[in-house]
Image: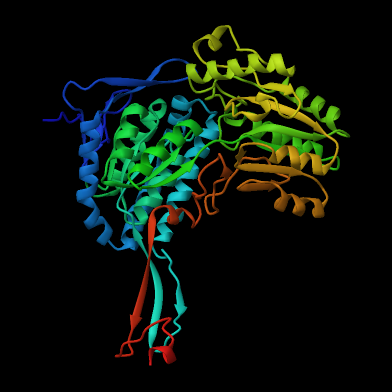
Length: 511
């Protein structure tokens, strides 16, 4: 017997405020008896945001069984009807956007405008995917034979595991869940433990919108146990994972043993190139937002700044002067420019890289943990800038924090060479007034995304998102390409000639 939580005001199946959250399996919120629990905390204050079940292998088994049972019925539900449920989710999310945005900020630490943006991105993508329910396009092509019709159709894969990180705790889950559901799959969702409450609230909205029992299931707990159990379960036919390279490689290897389709969105070390003819004030705004928005905790964050030598010193002076007026503090304060990093582990990793940087490069700005008063309750770091040669560890390895490596170059060709000489290839940017150079950069930069006169962050939901090299294994999320991750292509031949026709058989030799 599993214990069902008492509902809070207006919250069926989940306690309101700072209560305990269970697992969501087969349409029910429940806590296994004697279950161990863990908490998520506010990285700015240390307060507890929620308490969650540390699921075990048996819980994962029950979740995948529920998803497998629900799959035939959900698959047969007309895709436009599935889209109507998604529209209901988006409507509910829009109504609760202020509340959800504050929750993102409290649990993850990004400033409130970005927390609200996280939720808005979810809304936009769910609405976009709802429309795909009236498309799910295949293609028709002519046959080489008479009286024969050839086409392709899309079919769902089955049970899908969606494993998501903490830095976009509503947007990335919805990128995966909405695309998987509109395609006719059923889902077992494991959010990052650090933002488990955001994950639970996302699932609650789908429940309220009428997703049938078993179609969407939530299991919380450590990735090493819960995530691995999901990836290795034979009923799971596809895995969608966003996270670090090392974890992604392990997920890929485990999934390959079961011949599963595994989609990986991993890290980045994204460059902004500022050429000598750039609009420097515009580039300054882009670099500030790209490098220090979300405290640098985006896979698309600007972590390398490649500057032409003719504007190198003036631009760095502009940047450091602007940082002198860049407020770091309470992320719920609308005047704050940057909040805390997400956790003690994240803070420790970033400080280790800063210590490394002071040994192999020149510290130009920041480099300290902020202390005193409210800072002592959270994980607050100064925005940090290093002047470095290309090839240092801080210029090559993903730090995932507010640390920017600045590299001087003498030509466009050198800038592109430095930008490309890296293990990652997610996002890239160039600031220039030369339209010919801009279009050259679009072809020359080795990345899944290139911006011209804009920062490396700011993807739009109706366009594909993803990268090359160690950034992933080639798939794309968002846009119409999101459907490809969660569908199989079936080729259909309809012969209405009323006689045997043999494709690619030479008529004369057959006679």
